Image (cartoon, rainbow, N blue to C red; front, side, top):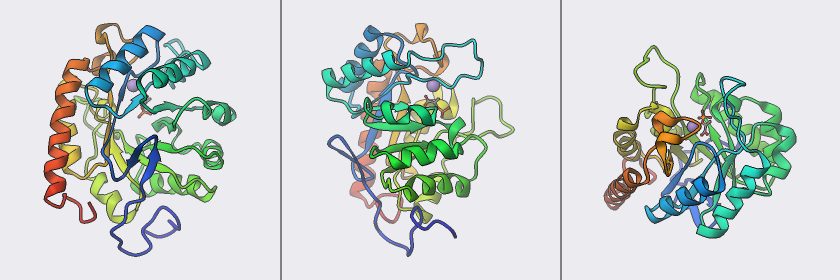
Length: 278
Ligand code: PEP
Ligand code: MN
């Protein structure tokens, strides 16, 4: 793929660039990121964090700034949410991933989180990409819901070219004719990215399907396709989730999923993986 000076593989290579987050090397160690769609309260976030940690997650997710379709829906707790995430990290030791939606906030938000998430709706917010490119924090770059792989990788290039080499890609589903699922999880993008880029790539089957029953099978499929990790929405009390209730997984179901994906990942790795460079 042309034009990708930093995101592309210059020559077919066996290397994936690992991104260090806490004591995890994303790209080498399997990243299992779990937590609520949004930080709603201290109790909800801490109890979910403890439960996902006990179930095998090695990173905590939680939105403090929510890019909602309607301006009347819950927009997130902002700074208060970031402080709760920091407390959850202190109590569990889990590194924290949270979304930033405005370039003007990126600097101070980065002081509260271990990974800055760029959401699907902001994938091509170039001012935001340049800003997180100037910060020294790992960035999780979600694929836009209407974006090609080339557009997505060029957005990674924006971050890399500002000097920040710590980029993790995340497939989260794209828009197609299908309406049964919230989005169409494009798993063929995983081995495709791995053919043309050295960046680690993970999969979010929660937003990718929007359906609880599909999260586990698509997690297994993502691992088989060569994903370096998963991001799953888990809530301590799914029926009461303020955001994305229909896809909020109960911690006990997440524990089952966690064990299955880790077993599958180990099984595949021991046999050389499904991608050439695993
Ligand atoms: C999220 O992960 O919280 C989120 C809003 O996802 P996406 O940007 O993929 O819709
Ligand atoms: Mn969500």
